[in-house]
Each structure stands twice: as structure tokens, then as C-alpha cells.
Image (cartoon, rainbow, N blue to C red; front, side, top):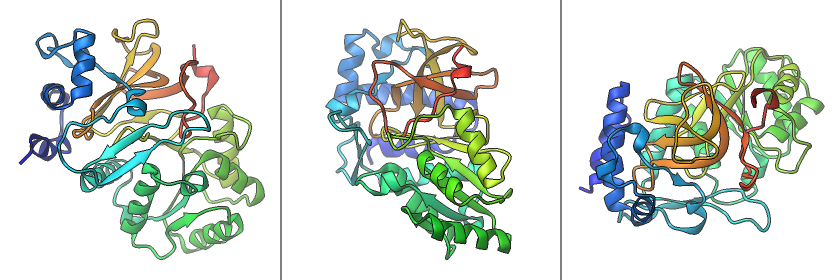
Length: 335
């Protein structure tokens, strides 16, 4: 059995902060030895295992490496390749997945932690920009959760807003707990053409106008969606091609992570120094489910941690590429 397999049995069973830190340090040492790209990066910045003694000294691989290198910590064959939705002329990130079953376990357990058993929902996915291309990790996740609901009305929608509107009215009339997962521009299109008063509906936006509409700050987007669906709060999902786990917000853009995932904030002018809580900086993500690629990733989003360890996404670095699934910015939270 590969050593990565040994870790999988422990990652999704993390219970405490101590469990997380201990396992993260073990996985760092494993990936330093098994991942040639990560090891070379650690060597170049002089963050070798003998110098890494706690969670905050673990080095984070810039996410741009997924655009230029194959990031792997295993000899297992690739089962799928997920790619990011870059715009024309920009390099695309690729994440080679060597264990789709473990990815499915990760996002299913994460969903259960925040929303319960998928079988209690009818899940409607309004993801046209993702369905129109190949190799989307978001479509893979949504398809799996849709199948897990075992509900006849669960499914994907492209641009048939009228059909989706009729389905929502039916679900409301039947008192069926329902979740609508959608890309932002399509959700706006839907409620502008077919508003509905469905207070019990969970509306979850995945971000992303991608040139389809004028960018809106998060508070404006959520206000328009709340009014259009008749709900108090808009939920959000934070994930990306390079991760195998998701963070969720149940309102106001405040995200929680599952126990095997953490967000740290790095200083803007020194990527190797970490901020304390309540300061804005670059987002570093530990996703231990990335056991067969790299669990420690420096992403190109700006964010802030609060006192309870929850985080906000505040925008993106000016030099970074526009990622298709990025969350919208609330400029009021930048300062």
C-alpha cells in the first residue's frame, strides 16, 4: 500500500486542531519526499523538513505551478484531469486526479458537515459556463451530489430558465427541501426574468461573471439574488481546480472549512510571513485531501481571517490571472 493510502484513512477523521497540525506536518514531510516539484521549491526557499517544526512554517506552493508543472505525490495512474476555466490567451491550471473515489468522499463529507445528507434535497445545478467545457471539477462534484439526492427532479440546467422556473414553483408547492447551485451571472439572469418567492430555498452561488455581465460587488449581488428568490441569505461555495475540498458560506461571505482544510493569511509584501487574524493578505490553503498532489497551496486571492477562524474573500492580486470561478469582491471589506 502506498503511503498516501495510509494517510487517507486519517484525513477525513480529523477532530481537533492538534490532530490537524500533527497530520499536516506528517503530510508535509511525505510530500517533500514524494513530490519532486514541491521538494525543489522547498529547497530553493530553504524550507526543508529540518526547519519546519509547526503549522506556520510549512511552505506553500504558488498555485501558478499547476499551470506549468504536473504536481504529483504518487505513482498511481491518473484517473481524471480537471482544468481551470482560464480566458483566451491565459495558461490553464491542470490538476491530475489519481483517486476520484477519495475526491468524492472529500466533497461528500464536506457537504454533509454543512448541509446534511444529500438525499434530503432536490439539487438543481445552474452551471452553464462549466457545462459548456470539459474537465470541470465543479461539474463532477455537482453531478455526484445530484445522483446522491436520488430525487427525480434533481439535475443540470443550461439556459432553459423557464423550465427551471417551473421546477422551482413545483418544488415550493410540494414543500420539498431544495438547493440551487449556480454560477452568478446565470442566477442573476434567472431572477431578472423569473423572480420567485421561495424563502425555504437554499441558493448557493459559485461566483463568476466571466465577462457575461458587469462585475458586481458581493453585497450587491447577494441583495439582488435575495430579493429575486425571496430568501434571507445567499450561500456561497469556495473551491477551485487545484483543491479537492470546498469551503462554504451560509451568508454574508463568511466561510467555514471542513476539519481537514484550513486557510492562513500571508503578508502581501512577504509571501513567506503569515499575518495574525483580522488582517488582510494573500490566502494560503491547506487541503489535506490533496494528499496525492500538494496539500499546501498559495493562491492568488486576498482574504482575511476573523477571531473564530472563519475567512472572507476580498479580491485578487492585481498581477494574478482572472480565474473563472473566483468569488466576487465586496470592496467595503478591503480595509
